Amino acid sequence: MQRADDNAHHPSVEKRRPFFDWVGRWGMLPAMAVLVGAGLSTIFASGARAYWRFELLCHFRVQYFWALTAAAVFLWIARRRLAASTAAVLAAANLALILPLYFGPGPHGNAGPAVRALSLNVYLNNPDHAATLELILREQPDIVYLMEVSPRWSETLEALAADYPHRKLILRWGTDGVALLSRFAFRGVEVRGLPGGGLPTLVAEVAAPGGDFTLIAAHPASPGSRQNVELRNRQFVELAELAQDRAGPVMILGDLNSTGWSPYFGRLIEDSGLADSRQGFGVEPTWPRFPLPLRIPIDHCLASPEISIVDRRVGPSVGSDHRPLLVDFALPER
Image (cartoon, rainbow, N blue to C red; front, side):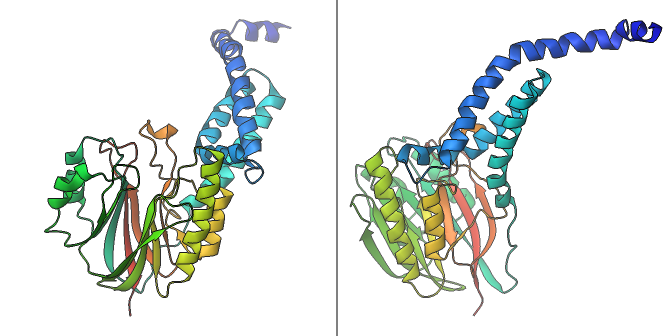
């Protein structure tokens, strides 16, 4: 009895108990709300093929993981063990889809000289052209692919003409303007209209120092409606067929308006035979301009397995709602 009394009056116990009681009391209701919201989103995302709105839920795996992890901690402190365990299991389910991105093959031993590609959706209404120009001059990419390029960008692109003499420009006032700039010669550039029309896709045969390769510069439809989701998915099928029809190394580059967690994106990977260049580099979110925890990875580089990804990173903000994607890669030596 004396021992229990002593513990009851121990100053460290008195200080610790009110803190945990306060956390449990004020954190339980928000944590339960997070468990319901992020938990149901995690579950419904598994039905992405059944309903287009469920497919939109696939893209926020990182956000679900952190939200559910925080909920699990607060619920455990609040002594809601079952709810905390449920949150932890759902957090783990999302983590299982995130962790594989941090493991991947290293650069190939037989790779040739490195080539740098930059992909950026400049955003149609972005007035800060100077920031994009400074980025290109600083990073010195060998290949630049810009999307949503209007005629207002003509002067900026002209300033790059000396460094990038090989180019294909389609300047339009809508979101379907594109610019492909290269230090290396094009053996040919084909403008393809993916199913549904609208955004053009450029298929370029690039004569790089390590050898020729096919670059498919794409910008499929944004999935803002059921019709657009279906259109984007049909465009994924067409992109996979374009990649399969090309001999030699192939790369798909651009704002693909999907994360890798969509089953339709997974089908694009499988059917094209290409690999996601993020393997070994992590999530690397690029959109929107919100702080890092709220961004998702919808700008991509997919490459033939024989192409070695030397480095991959997301660049700084340049006034667009997208961050630029920079990929250093090497073709197999011949």
